[in-house]
Length: 138
Image (cartoon, rainbow, N blue to C red):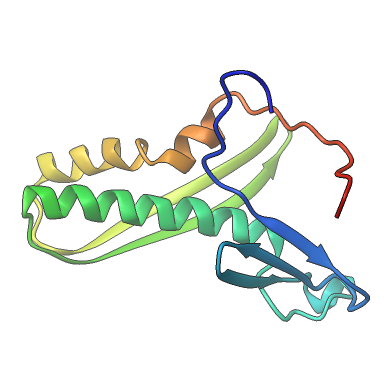
């Protein structure tokens, strides 16, 4: 950890001998991540790209729900659909929002702005550094 760093999340990913099946733990919660059978995985859980999109989608939905509740807008359900595309210049994530409820065009435009304010969106569109090292004493 560097001076001024504060961990905002911590997870452990652990894999044994079951081909590609990985358990991710965060606090008291566990999820299984795996690869599809088409690349010799067991398809027992989400694949890593789907998990990344799931993080963005759930963060977007939660952020929108918080805002909508605070504004007391009549929205019963929020659906966020995402797709990940590999392009010649990198990667593009496309995100679509759908709301069950009556919203004006002004409200919908505001919700597009709020979607971009979710913390995972900010991380993915900001500067990311990944540092890898060996952990001793496990």
